[in-house]
Length: 160
Image (cartoon, rainbow, N blue to C red):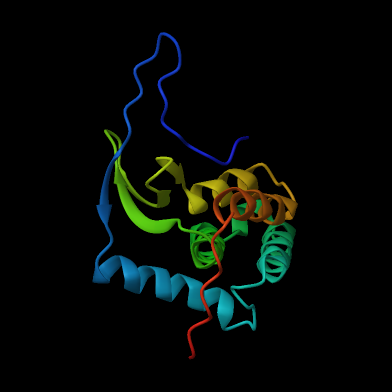
């Protein structure tokens, strides 16, 4: 499964780039609430290996529950995907955006010069449902950061 969505048009297909809009306060609050689910356990969003460990531990706990009794994993998936997205945003020129297509609106991270989209929560959801280990988080973060941070200094961490 690829991690990038360029929305390029393959031969014989008509794929349109979603309409992108800046996020507003509701989306910023949603991002903050979901990343807090991860950070309140002590995870540092600047350390993708800690995010990966949180994913692996959360997925393992959830899978140990008898399937008919499992809670809906969407909150955890959204929290982990948002934490991963925030990690990438902090280290690259990608920025949170709303991506509207003919099906729905979804939070994505976008780099305008290359018109490249990444849907962090979708990335996590696909791997979670496929029962893949969290190694994809480290691999994806390394790939994205290497691709987009060339020649760009990482901004200093904001004081909390």
